[in-house]
Length: 428
Image (cartoon, rainbow, N blue to C red; front, side, top):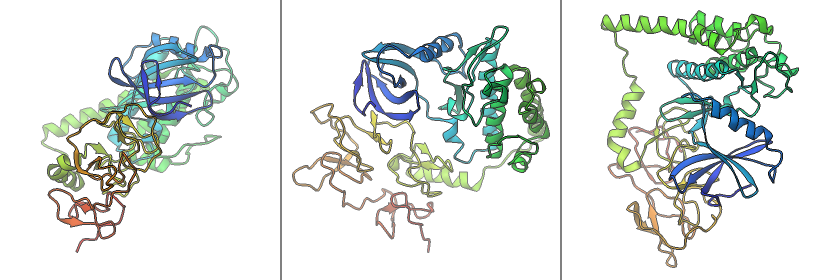
């Protein structure tokens, strides 16, 4: 396993994103192009046993589409076979752990169908459709990844039962994948996206979560999912292209109704919570750097926050892109390359990369340790140089209130929880 700050070729490892039975995926920095990338590295050593990964690169190279994750580079670096890809924010599996609006879910569903339809148009059967293989990028762009198990369809396809058991079609489990197998798997993904539940065998209709599904989407959409999840492949959509066409019909109707309402002067209002967040950002975004969204409630948060001040969720900005060059492998918050420790989570020592210390305008005070006196940024919990716990009670510029438990500054008129210790805010 590679460690944070370790270099492999031109890439500097920032942290590990995921670990599977065949490969590890790391967040890294391309020191030549100065971009952040994701590196997929097989666990086998040497130049053997990489046929599936070579196949993945070759298949991805044939598919150029906004909703398919491209391979930037693939090469042997020492004993490692390294696949470099664009770095996303999180997987759809991570996003499904938080509340998601119906409008946003419909947009993601359309993108997932568009990416898979493009693969099917090029005679590629993915064979491992699951939420973990859809990657989200800024602007809610969704991309289909991991074509390691993909098969090229000629007249017949012979393959093992590759795929993820929760989403695999019955005929694929028996080694006979078809385009309809991908349709079945994507139908289960979309069912979970809108209902919040993953159905299980024997997939008898109505399935678990049906009430919530019917309450969120139109009957045409429910019928589309029901057809996609039929046990008999012949009763499903022929491929994702046909399924995408069925998906677009009710969406086109919804857009038409929206235009009619707009002509009649009907306009959706802004919720009270959105107005509250907007006012909070106007007052505190600059001083707190609340550029991220909570992973649960989507409220504005900073990566230095230990909890979401709106819903109390732990480490709400985890996985968000930081303005700092590297990230802590433990809490995934941003760190600087000259720090020895994580200033936010008391993380372990880092691999030493540089000996000099770089100045930073964000350092506002000095460490209380007389032997250290290193610079500290606002709301740090530990000194990044000597690991001394910060005793200073941080105050919020422009705010007058303090948490009753930790005594750090809070925005009492806005917050429901203390962002630093998760204590509920009591308003008098």
